[in-house]
Image (tube, rainbow, N blue to C red; front, side):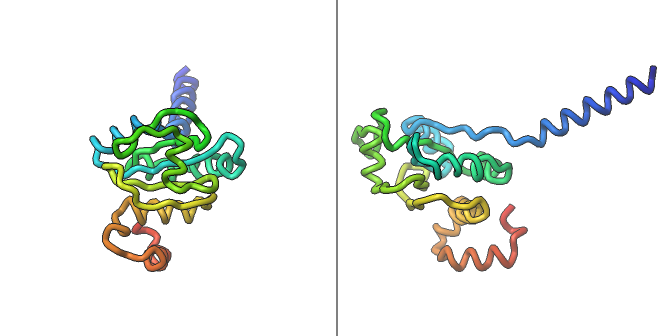
Length: 170
């Protein structure tokens, strides 16, 4: 009887350990809620601009945003916003009200996906158009999230130094 109990405890422990190691899904905000949260939390904003028909957007969700290392870093460092570039939803920015569609146009988004980075107060930092493979995306996240951009480090220089010392990006 003790042996069965021990095996049961071990199996329960193994199953809970595997559940614990599963990445938890990212929490995406709507535009207005995301800006409010970022301002209060003093965290930069990542905006994923997408459309429902965009295959590369779906691939970005499937191959990049689903990775545990990407999810971990994003959830610790950024406030995340999903913006459907074809939606009529209202979105306020810099004292004006836009639709999601017109807001994407205001940021000069011309292809999908586009990743927009904003400072905690909503100030525009950069647009990064297109699908970004996960390893490159992590470099970009660390570049912005760890303040290298704010310190004036050119991205290419950061990539070279990060490639030489990848343990520094944890």
